[in-house]
Length: 406
Image 1: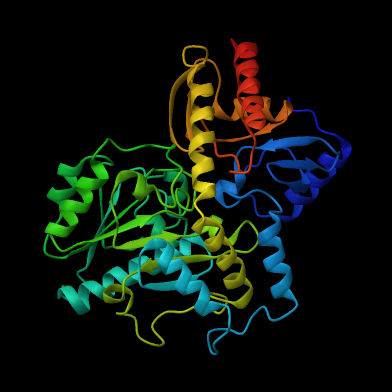
Image 2: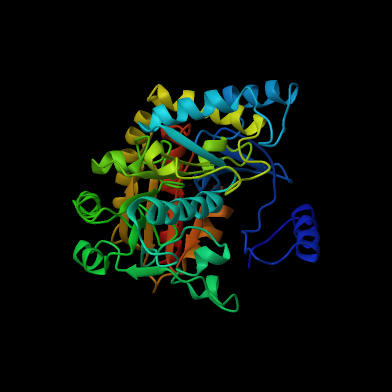
């Protein structure tokens, strides 16, 4: 039983009474945050090892990003795309340069970036590749997670995401993740794209076999099929590179970006690619009232300039090695397996010992916030600004929790 104070209990009771129950959060009520730490309504501090699913890659309240947001708040926050604004052009140009691409389609949420990528791939298929109307096919991976809109859950394998939400959108074929032969066998003349997470996040930080992404790139080029990389969680410094695709030595046709692109301040997402693909869109065929708004563009530009130095990526590599080594030392002591890249680690707990949820609750009591996924798997994704001492603290608390459970 998790013990809560009256302040925490009261706050949770209000949420339970008035919010849709589409989440099952841990029983901590955050009031303030700075860097890698958050403080609850009772004044207790916790090390944030989730970073809002990588949306807070650069920590809470990172001053250069907060300063950019504050400065823009005093100028203009929203014009809609009916007009130009002075922040959007520089943001698009510098984000495209960071990705080594030419054009940007700005949106708000990660799911919107995925939906936009799907529309772009289909339009490219019809207008450039010559696929017959309404016959375009996109290949996706078993175990994928790209969001929860109706179209996206149509190609999910997660029964919780799908149950009672049909009928579903056609046009998708799912193949085993990590199996390049199955991928190639699924391609036909109507295939327009392969949509893939370079590392599957919600599935439990599943890292594909060595050479798999290079094989995907080779196969898609050979068959004139777009390679769309969903780097919404894996990108922007999390895995020790600007994009996880860099670690694999590949360049996709389209990057789907979100989460950390907004610096943990505002929702910002984007599709980034070259003009021969993104240029297929015509005025009026796709849009968003808030997509590319001045506030979002100003914050996104500050994020891009932060990443352009390479310091965050380097820090994530070094700290990630330390975190992974610490957790791997617990294999056989309640940990079954460890996977990851940079500061993104999936940890399989022995299911005979505890569920992932139980471990997360025990860690919360010890001042560490992580989140479970799929039974006995927990995820660590601390902000890149975390210190070595912070990471050592997290590993020590996990070791203590496992010792108490054994």
